[in-house]
Length: 154
Image (cartoon, rainbow, N blue to C red; front, side):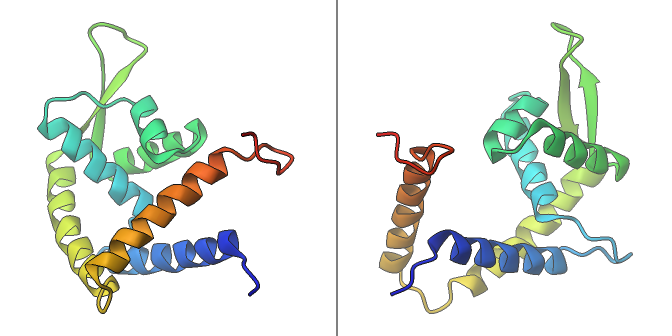
């Protein structure tokens, strides 16, 4: 069997990202990217527990580069979903909070994405899902053990 695991995962990720963008498209036709919505949800969860959110937290949580995080946050700020405020302890840090518009967007998107998730796993048993998540975790662990020359480091 010809195994192209990374390619298959990439193709699936692209399909899912396109579908999520389609589902989350605004009435004005402007799409909210999947990463924007995941970041909004992350900020929402942290803010609801009074945990401050900084750009470095987003970079770490989503394993994205600083430049990518900056672009996503700038777009979200322009769309008035978030605001950044200087921290009293350190003026170099800016905490990120949701605006009222951002809060409403999170509520709408949670509902839409819950429905999407339900449809996505239709016909898949709980045991199959548990195995899927276990395999994804192992693939991730193995990926982290591969150096830039493509050799295992352990």
